[in-house]
Image (cartoon, rainbow, N blue to C red; front, side, top):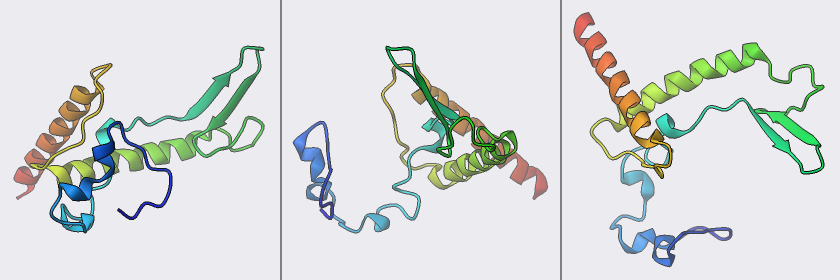
Length: 133
């Protein structure tokens, strides 16, 4: 409804979700984490590599730095971000527990794997909370 350019959908009716939802204020649908992707299904990558037909190669790390930059693929920064990613995943899982979660095309079973890992994290969290209470 508020988009002004570059919107797309596989089917035209999906361009107009407000026609099927009673609320047009998306934040009221399911608090502050509703529009975030399922963090258990967003891969954590460290670089992008592109190979061209003529043999050339292009690369950049997750921060847009190219080979030759002294901080290219900085292992300390990557470890810090991996830890933050894991914490964010667990928090996302807690907020979504018992609510709908995003699903993805299931070409490689990553949809079920992501759901299973989230359920395992939630079970461990509940067990830890019961043990400390």
